[in-house]
Image 1 (cartoon, rainbow, N blue to C red):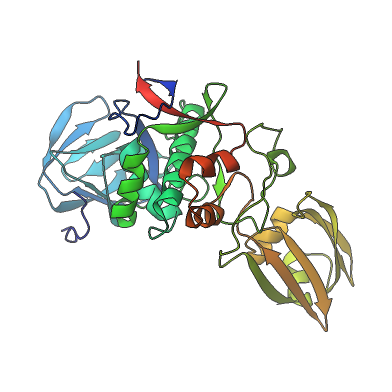
Image 2 (cartoon, rainbow, N blue to C red):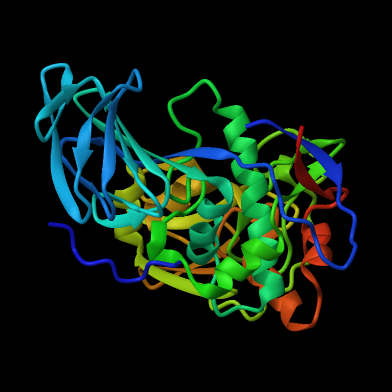
Length: 372
């Protein structure tokens, strides 16, 4: 049986300019998102809080499962084995206001199970606004000021729609990790995140009438980056700006590792004797680092170094003394777009979410999704 419910909280659109009339009319532009909750898993426990219909990939009803029960799904040849049913694809559709159980937690919406390699791919189909209740709570701190949470809601909504458009021909739009946006189902929903999402319902950031790539990160360490210095070609709305993230617990940090161990991780250089940045962004993030050891020299990217040492960012300086490497860093994340701790800092000063968004997404406009 499923564990008891503990914290239940009870495709076509155009953009219009956001007009402020004191209150916003209820949004009508429902958007279905496809979120990969489990990927290539061999076995999966699924269920529903209410009675749920079970359909195959053609939409035919195979049967019904009782509420508050769960089932193990596995592979049998080229089919999924779900209780007494066998199908190449299975849908679980809770009735009424039910929730779906996928793996180890509850989610809103319905579940699509399909084959992926030798495993099972579980996709949560969920309304965009319902999805954001969870994402805002997982990406930001729920006790932050409402204006910071509203900024996060608009950024996350914009990012989700951008990815939905880019991945239209793929099995899913987003996953549940920092590779896209963190999503934990009902586990990360709070009354404050509900309030922030509802207050900004259907609002997105646009440039020249198109939804922008509204990337964000935890903390920049004092100044965000131009996107072309980190990833790609210039974008007029992803420009480096002064950050207000000084209250972040990772605004400054440090890490120590032995020079011998660092040499082992880098490989082929022996004990590290020097670390010399070869290329860096205007704000100081390392793009390429020369690693000089007693047995060789190697150039590695800042991202490689960050991954090897599990650093919070590539905004670092290093010194080597008596066989140890001391790394001094600032910020957490890639440094492009909105700084979440910076948004919190601005909100604490009384800055509203619209100003926060316009600060971090230069030249972008707040617009609203409306039905055709």
